[in-house]
Length: 452
Ligand SMILES: Cc1cc2nc3c(=O)[nH]c(=O)nc-3n(C[C@H](O)[C@H](O)[C@H](O)COP(=O)(O)OP(=O)(O)OC[C@H]3O[C@@H](n4cnc5c(N)ncnc54)[C@H](O)[C@@H]3O)c2cc1C
Image (cartoon, rainbow, N blue to C red):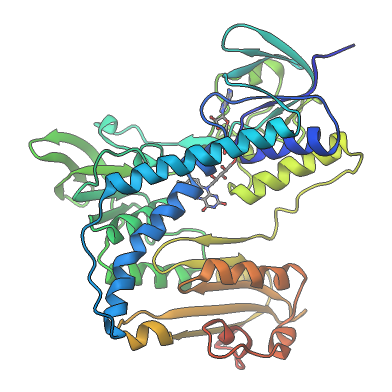
């Protein structure tokens, strides 16, 4: 049977673009890709990239304040959102072009259209045209999820935040995950008055308890008004803003309410169920270790599979899929160990198991330190850094590393190499420190603070 293409990719985000480029450019497959919005997907257009640029923007007031403590006659003026937004829009357009260039350079045919599945080898574009392919890769990502509360239409999500016309003076961030916590810090740094409501007992669920406590304390010190155990019951448009009626009995008016209460896989309306592709309870496409669905010609990678919802993981999955199907090398992605960062202020970098998860698995030693780093201590700031290693008593391997510090994301990337290689505590100890740095503490912690 002959097909129009060897591979049709639905979704031009992190996973889809990588799979298409490797399949076509490296392995010589005939590939087409459909994207219904903007090339680059969530990460480039409304996720990691614009968010990180906003993180940078939000850090300048603190830097200027510190500069004064170091003797500089520095003054920060006002923040002009419209200037920043215009530059941001231009940068995203540049990146989108670069993604398109990469695809066309690899010989991929791009359809700027929504695509849905018709059968195991056929997709239909928005104009009704059908295209056949030997393999179909679904890489449609995820979307913000806002619970069914009264007045939910008044809320914005991370999709809209980069498009705001003006910065709100008073913002409520609802949610306790990394996206909610990052935006709470960003908006606080940009000068907004920020409240954060989270229905759980502590923000950043799933991360090491001590690290999350450390981040939450520092966020509060920096001015974010965090209310745990608190949820919004309804939102109302009132004179002068949006009133949030909360479970703690409060009724507070904000200029904007940002919901960051989780994301759902984009699997609806694609025609998957009718073809026999299994969906999980959250709507995620169920795949095996090689990203293959129950229908042998249909594969899925990235957030739509809800495995580890991070860009580098989606990229890895897309690459492994292309190598497996078109490169003759059966490759799978190990989801058990990955480094990641939370770009709160202070930042958190983490790899491996939290202390709590590790203790459930085996006897451990915990090495931890908290201290005031030289740079900000000199400036008179109360900021504290936390570093923590979880060590297996039996194998001596580092099972987890958690860092809360400026630049923690950069640090954990490097620690991640050693931990992925299976480094032991003794190998960390044998590493000569780089002095004076914050990260030297990672190789100079001699005695465990806890065992068991
Ligand atoms: C605010 C925010 C911050 C984030 N920060 C980070 C971070 O710092 N680090 C990190 O690693 N990850 C971060 N992420 C997560 C990261 O963006 C995702 O894990 C990653 O983009 C997933 O890639 P993907 O290819 O699975 O899907 P996506 O990048 O979401 O791409 C899916 C694409 O498919 C398109 N599409 C959907 N349905 C169809 C259809 N039927 N037809 C055609 N096209 C379709 C969509 O328009 C989209 O472009 C962040 C996410 C958000 C929302």
